[in-house]
Every structure is written in C-alpha cells, then in structure tokens.
Length: 260
Ligand code: 13P
Image (cartoon, rainbow, N blue to C red):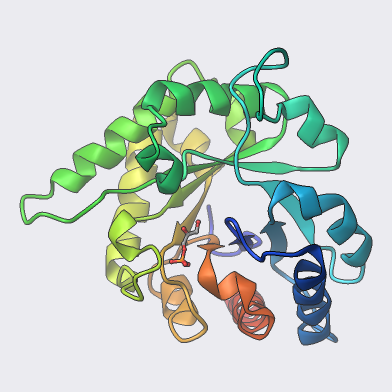
C-alpha cells in the first residue's frame, strides 16, 4: 500500500463492555470526539456481536462500520453457538477478524484459520488476517512464524481475492502489555509481509493488501507507528474502548493521511 492509501483504524472490543448501554455510550462518545473532523481514515469497530444492530443505529455521522471478531468455518448447520458468514453479512458486517492470537491460543489451528478466511473471502467480505509471533528470539525465528502463518492461510487464495484481504501484524508479546513493537520493528515486519506476499502474488498483488499493526497502540505511539512504521492503520484493543483515546488516534491518523 502506498502511504496515501486511506488508513484503516479497527477497534477490537473483544469481550467488552459488559452491557449494551455501555457499548452505546462508547459509540456516542466516539462520535462526539470526532465532531468536525475531516475524515480521511476508515473507521471500523468490532464489538461483541449481540450489540451490532443497536450500535449501527448510532453510527451515522462519522460513517463507522462494523466488523465481527470471528466467524464459523461452516456455512450453516448443526454447530451450536457458532455464527455463520451469511448471518454476519445479513446484519451489515463488512469485515471479519480471522485468526486472532487469542483464538489461536484457544486451539484454533492454521487449518481452521484458513477455512474461516476462505469463508470470508469467498463471500466477498474483507478478512483481517492476524499474524504474530509469541516472542522474539535473537535468531529471527519469528520471521518464519509469520511466513508460515501467512502461507498456510493464503494457500489457494487467488490474486483477484487479495482485494478482500487485510493483514494485521499483532505480535503476541505486545498485546495488552503496554509494550508496543517499535516503529522500526513494525516497519521491518511490514516489509517482510510484503515480501512474502510478493513471492506468492507478485508486487502488484502484494501492494493491494493493507498491512495494519496491533499491540498496545495508544495515542502516544500512533503517530510514530504511522510515520516511521509506515503501517496502513491499526487493530486496537484496549484503547478502542476509551472513546476519547480512540477518537484521538483516529484524528492522528487523519492528519497523517492528509500530509503523508
Ligand atoms: P491491545 O491494543 O489491547 O494491545 O490489543 C491488541 C489486539 O489484540 C487487537 O486485536
């Protein structure tokens, strides 16, 4: 992605907040915090699914759209507790996070991640594919981890389908720890992910894919991650539940997009 591409800012609320009324308040406060902005960034929130329909009613002025945090690998049928892709599409979901490390940790294998990614892309929704190493060793083995997560998930995905793909680099050691990847580390991994995609699809294919960063993104590190890390946006956990901070990160990203 070129620097001028519209940054993508995604808030992953995970299993928060505990009630619909608190969720509504966050969205209302985000709208207030963004009042008057000349929006250059694309804003997406991935709330718990039971809240989506109500939150959509509140999300007009700033054009916030909604993502799901997961999807079933199956289309429909006897899968108690699962939610299928056509259900998500029918309530207006445009993007789906796939392979978040918290799900991989809870036994989601590369094969399952791939099946889910195929389901999302096959239905022409956008998949936000999460990749990330658990820790960094001095031998650089984490590059192999990222490469194998990417190649496993993208096997058989065609170049035309890359328009439905976003890759989120989320090093596990940075998630919820307050220790973000440095802008230089984010930049290095962004280049590496582009190289893996280029090897698979050629440069033109690789450049179609936005690469966002996630892991302890806050309003005090967002600007450097964009300017020095050159990432195409963020996948934000904790800070996306704080309406003021989330709005402030969006404004930082708007400014960056304007002057990049
Ligand atoms: P934090 O921003 O809380 O570190 O979470 C990142 C994340 O997991 C987003 O998907």
